Length: 504
Image (tube, rainbow, N blue to C red; front, side, top):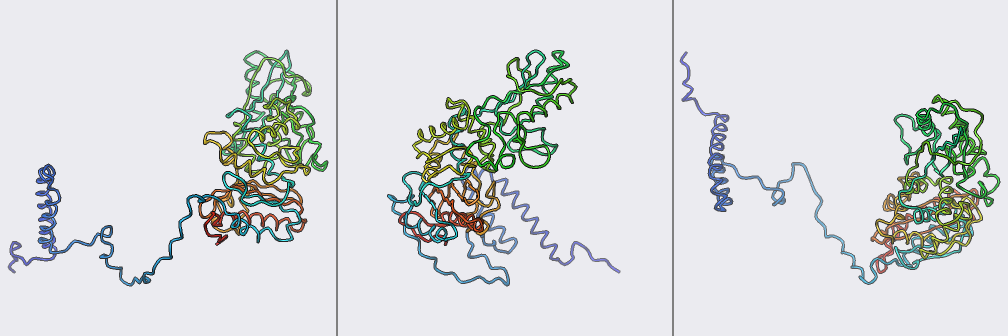
């Protein structure tokens, strides 16, 4: 059978595509060869046009429409149907520049009244809502028991009076054969280091590491045997606040001392130990013995004078503030109150700390509390008006970006996301979740919330919502009502001259 001469075989589609590809390669080579000249002569666009024309003649097709420049020319995918275009809603009228950014008292009142008007909230309801500065746009009620919103006052006072970056050192000193652990008021000093793979927040010192460092230094000095002492005299006055209920002893809060481990909690079980400093010293002595140093006798309370042997340091004060606000840490706050007392010239007692807080508030132009006896808000005898909390938050918002008190804003729990608000705001409008930041306050019959929000029309605001006569059966409802009220502020169009459509 004669074979077909391949040189005279009929052209196939693949042959046509091959020739077209060959032409395209040649065209591209020509284009590249002419590119330099075209570029130098600013003839790029004419050259491109000629190249496109040649391509169309060779391939016999047309260029696909470009969706970025001519989207209407791009055909719809087969089977896709789109709704007809409709006219958009009218644009809202622009706010008056003279009042834009100001809160409308009427809008704020409407946003709150249906959330805070229920009889189940009790007879004592106090509220203040203000912009970032100026007088409250809406306020009602008198000073009430603040519970843990008191921690805002202590936090600001600590950041105002204690040098930024300050850490609290726990040291050991050697005098003769006595090794003394000296408490420096570290609120988070732990019994032992974090377990592998875990990390406390903030980073924390521990007394076992202090024992290890001390043992290493003692060996360097040739010391093999010591007696252990402890000194917790940095703070003065009673360790347990006389304004706290007796029922708190051994259960709710530890005695506040300058030396403790795990905030006065026992190694196992619940509650608080009776003498946190003595327990801490015994933990140290046991860890020192485990390092090969012979410990004689039981630890004794002594003056911590002598040559420093070793030291461990707490996290910086701003990290301490961040943590205590996030989780509403009573013990850490009371330790910071003692440091405020020391920083303002006092002797480190509850009374000195409170006096220091009041001095800071006066300097900031914030109304003083009607009564203040502690730093954490555990005392039911404290009385603070919502205007005080609002004024304090305004001072924080108005501070310079590098002012240490701005750390308070970062420490405020975020609605539905962090800290004591992680599992709250479940039923809040979407506008509130992640937008409201606030410090909680809870005691039996008492519920409060103080923080910041931004309205739907962009007005920043501060608020304080307080209740202190809530029936036991209504406590959960009261907490949810405060969440709803704060959420309503974030969902409100509260700008003066804007829509008062709260929650829509």
